[in-house]
Image (cartoon, rainbow, N blue to C red; front, side, top):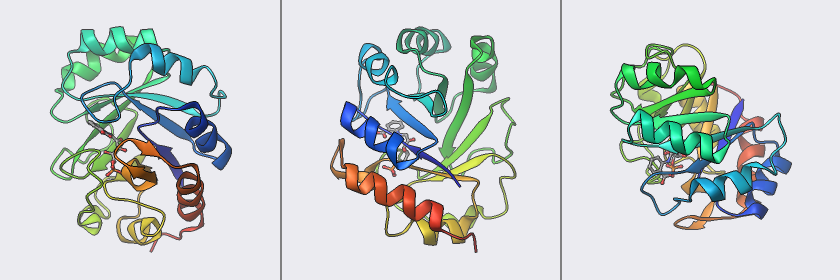
Length: 199
Ligand SMILES: O=C(O)c1ccccc1NCC(=O)[C@H](O)[C@H](O)COP(=O)(O)O
């Protein structure tokens, strides 16, 4: 089970995610309580070993803005949330970064339909921590897709059984308050996701 921990802002939480065995970590570079600057993302990413994918998260920025911030932050992947057209992904392809498409259950659920490398199927409001009907997308995306939206250490096994994703992505569920991550919850989440059996 691929595990991404999103919305990291502090070095100790980056370290906790790496130590817990996360496959990917996300830095939010768009409007959010978790927003950090590209410079801060670069500092945090510098401490991340090569086997962990560093992801910069955007929602609604132009390809030019995404390109500039991605290069400044030195991440290895960009994640575009919401209504980004196919052309935005094509415009970023030459960066040589992993491209992640993310949106609610109403998005095109075909993995790779926008030439992305990874798909995230999320709640209607990203980063809200609101659970949704995870089972509604079971069997629909086929390929490298992550389930997100309202996951936490106590429900991630249930969510995996319901939706059978390739991976999971979490932000609020490993926090003690908006944007405040907790190392223990990060560890618990990764362990629960890895211990889960798809139903
Ligand atoms: O996390 C945010 O605040 C955010 C804001 C705007 C666009 C995307 C955002 N997060 C993207 C993620 O990948 C989150 O991990 C995902 O939406 C799940 O969030 P949560 O329900 O809080 O676990």
